[in-house]
Image (cartoon, rainbow, N blue to C red; front, side, top):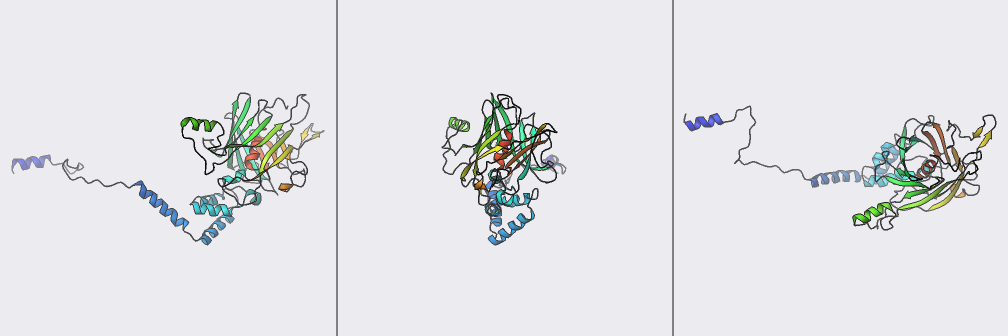
Length: 366
């Protein structure tokens, strides 16, 4: 065998080693799948779902809605609304607001009035170490707490002598999920409720970084409708330290909701002012304490417990014929757990904000 042939045979790689491309060989490079094709595939998949016959789509959503009236089964209907834009619009048109159905489905329901006949039962869990509060929807009528559907969360911040509560739609209170806040004065006896309104289509966004920072710190009418004052909660002074419970006066703007579960980004609803005050408890001679009938929804005596009612003759726009109908009820059932029951014309957001004012010490009222 010629020497050159023996040398090439010795230098040849063994079958056990992986073959490597030669330096001068024709190495082929296959193209990667572009992101545009992935987007086209997703759009095609979405088009397949949105191309359903309207009658068939409406029948599917009606069947899912009828089979899942309460949580956690209600999650199936929310999933249907997340398929595509057309399914979402059909679901919003089908679902009735809390005033009519007595339940909460979408985030828009948190700022819509509750039912008229029976209140929506919720409970609040407090975390003293983190100064956070979480609102849950009660899933069972028998148990006061237990497993619930998360609705809103709040964090308390101290600003000198004032208190501020940031209200969010996420349990971790991440940035960008805030829907409103609550601020107190330096005596912590007067609280103002602020509602974060959605941005309208013609808003002009600030260009510079400095203007964006200022817009996040104060109300900027060019960016959005901003944070709007929607209510005030005041506690009467008790300078003489007389014996008795707290006295609460509320003035809130209640939306006039008479339609479907509309998208909150579409339009701002007209509102009507409502005045509320707490129902005065009676003194029980045998127990030597102030008592209110909470119908079994409150188990522990506390200065935070209250019931709000409307003065006679002021609740006609919302169907309140007398001053004995309890619109908001809040009370303690165990350490760091409180019940919250609300009805029309208050929304879950407004009721939660009013209940937050009861936490914390108020030296001028007690």
